[in-house]
Image (cartoon, rainbow over all chains, first blue to last red):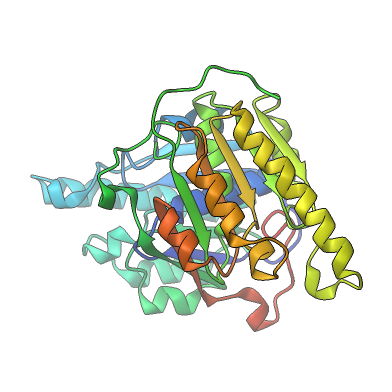
Length: 180
Length: 180
């Protein structure tokens, strides 16, 4: 865990939502930008398997400034054990809350967090309370589809990524170094 | 310039457009992903000053796999010399064409390229011809507002970033390590 001195700016809450590609990659780009300033970043991934080999390898170049935590169990809609999913998701959330409260980072990215309230595994109110009470200078970035209006209201910056066209539509396979 | 062996997959054309934040950062995230596979990446920035200190510093960590070229002169709408702007933009475009044709990279990112046809500095047809004739395995990523329908038609993946909320709306200043 990185323990650099925090830069004294107001921390923002950013949300990347929508059905299009680029939510997680945009968050990654923000991490890249912060790391260039030697600001420590923590990425917590709530859906296992959503981050792939490419970015994992790149992330290693930024150690120890970048911490990367893979939580969760994968997409719940194909799960055969929703109770277990929920327990794992809540454990991930407790971890994220602790990371935010401990305030060792300049930026915390909660990747795919929106799926938790969307699938009823976590009350939206829990997230809003943590954002409201977050350390003043910490940037929090949340990604995932189905961001609620309450989350949008609580955020400083919200971009919706709209899918205009997707390569799978034209039958093109996922590409190493591009899609993963 | 990196000269690694190219991976033999079909190269995609991706476009990140729209008025929201996250277009360039999503492209950066794709670069990050490709670099993690040791795929060489070239970023060409058509609007000077749109990339900031943070990502420049991070980019250095990936040398010599990542080449970064800053072209252009800044936003044309505040220019006092449109002819000079156009000449510089066309020079940047000639450079980009050469980089694409030479095929030394796995991914070429043309950041803010869409401004050139939008401001009448470059014919859209020029871009479409280069995309049509690009090396088969090369990924090309184009960012910027106002992507034309013809460019969208030519692309495999298109995401429109819609601005739902921007921190400047609520009077918050740009943040080091976040906005730049």
